[in-house]
Image 1 (cartoon, rainbow, N blue to C red):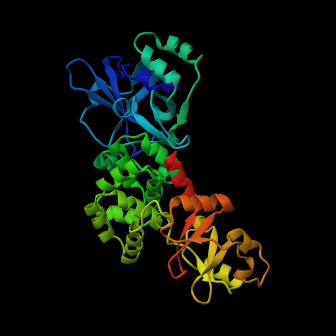
Image 2 (cartoon, rainbow, N blue to C red):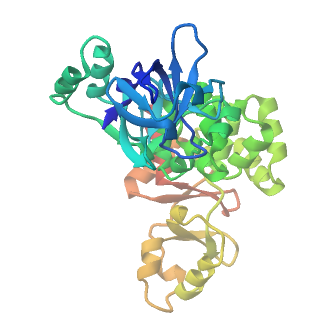
Image 3 (spheres, helix red, strand yellow):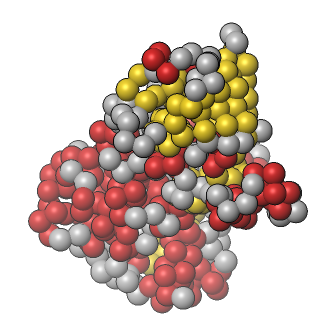
Length: 413
């Protein structure tokens, strides 16, 4: 096992034993092999820097590299943005630890040796983001490698396996050349991803949102605070912003668009499908501190005379987010709100029971102009998970869930 810092500054000798130069940089070619050190930049005084390829390395040791070719076989150095430079792009730079779900700073890299066809390949195995790497960097060039290693052995380690490292590259063109993917991030919980974004710069946040699919971006934006949400969406192309906001719950989309400048909000709504845009516009008319401003217009509504089997079969065939399916709302024969059946009751009810027979009591609702204080009091008094919002005719127009209440209360803390 070698450290990247032990190779940087190492003396390189050709196959005849002639000094070629010192290792100034290590390059990885992610498009070819994600962890292999593919090239070594060798510099010597005022001479043109040379590049040794991975298959031209005969042996390596802390502070020393020996090649299996003569100096004449080496290429002259030419910059290539498709190369990931260890010293420039990784050491002291922020990366995302997708396993630990946080942003960390790289202090060193651990390299493992692999013998292939008579040459030595170095591959990145671990990113050192702890005290051992920091001390190694501090003592580099001051103490011999053997002494540094003895000191490091007594220190606690904090390593990240290379496969759990997600690089941060704000430049979209270079991101493509490096083939930097944020697919790993899309599998994180939106709340964890939001925490990661909050620790990044504006450009880094933007690069990650740009690379996520619309659904992942929407879920992540919903977890960010209002200021960051607004900053990100304002920098997006209206069409891209519309695609993301379309994936949000209508109440979340309305809250977000209400924070944007009127012209920006209008442009985004114009890019959204007519039905979704119409729902959002209706919600934007309500004061955000009222029941109407908190409600969501996507819910499952059935007749109170329907049986348990009919409702379950119908739910199986409709498009609805299962994570938002906490309850089924009821209408009577006059299309007026008639109650709520929690999902637990629906699943445990006997065959043939009607929805009216298993609804929760009392039947509770609020008008859209009710204050958020009234909403909080009802949720607290009756330990509610959902609450219906009804219009002047008694018809349900939206629902409020307990997570909406928690979000509002958390914002006030």
